[in-house]
Image (cartoon, rainbow, N blue to C red; front, side):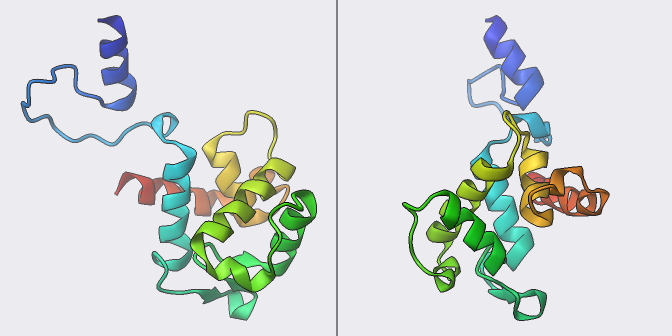
Length: 143
């Protein structure tokens, strides 16, 4: 019973599963997953795949990946293979992102740190310039 109450408090999971309606409240960021983060990034970066080229042609794909980002990821995880243009494919781009995070994110990184690294490079999680991006991500996760 304690677990149900705790889930209700932390993640907005209803304690009564009898089909009664509950008010929808935004979940705390701590309750979101990496998959939720990727979905929010997909929304923020490319409008859910509507804008596949950005930053004046320097970034491509649903996650707006730069060539240098791609190179760092495939250099770190050679099993990914492929070519930069493959970043236009959502599933491939997610492999690139995960490899980049494995290379540069601190152990036990938060979703905020991961998002800010994606946006600002290896030290992006320490740069104030990436805070605005993180706010956009949180908004997208809660919509």
